[in-house]
Length: 124
Image (cartoon, rainbow, N blue to C red; front, side, top):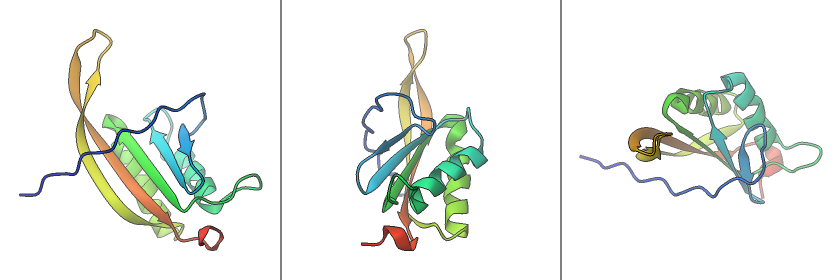
């Protein structure tokens, strides 16, 4: 019986970015919600993995989601792999405690997928 590895706590994102991404030089974290569709997050992931005029491609992209957004993470990760933008390095699951508006906590499924960039621009 295997026990899932707990997720590391992501740092809070300052400001508001459309894809809610947190970046370091080689690693980007995309916090995915159910408010946007798969195509939106796929475009954002492709931008991180291919790079833009302003930013170079990241070597590692971490996709993370809670609850209803888990399916979006799975779709984006598999499409990135299918389009040969990245390979799936790691998949982690957890059951996080989330505070409700009434102040109580409830359990919520959590998924994190780590993608390694395979595009030529990101290789060291």
